[in-house]
Image 1: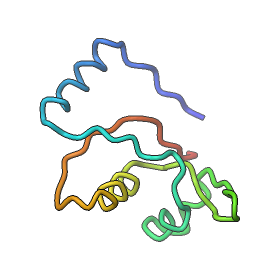
Image 2 (image 1 turned 90 degrees about the vertical axis):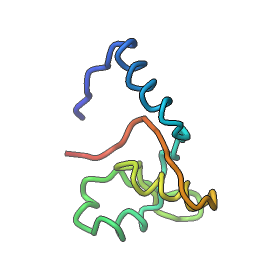
Image 3 (image 1 turned 45 degrees about the vertical axis):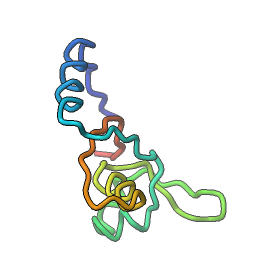
Image 4 (image 1 turned 60 degrees about the horizontal axis):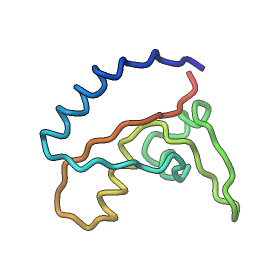
Length: 95
């Protein structure tokens, strides 16, 4: 797995500050996402690049390959008509 070098703390804080200034709501999408949703959006060809697990009850889930679907799901669950979101964290996709 390729791991990117960490940004120095002062640079990371400068990036975060720019997003805080916009008034965006910080969200932390769950790391586990429904596999069916990801495959419906991206297609079966992506399966080989995902980290797939079987959750309790038999549902297949995957480690989030990006933030688009998880953030959209959080927005829909909030019931808000619109929103601005900021987020950071790991995403998982095999190369």
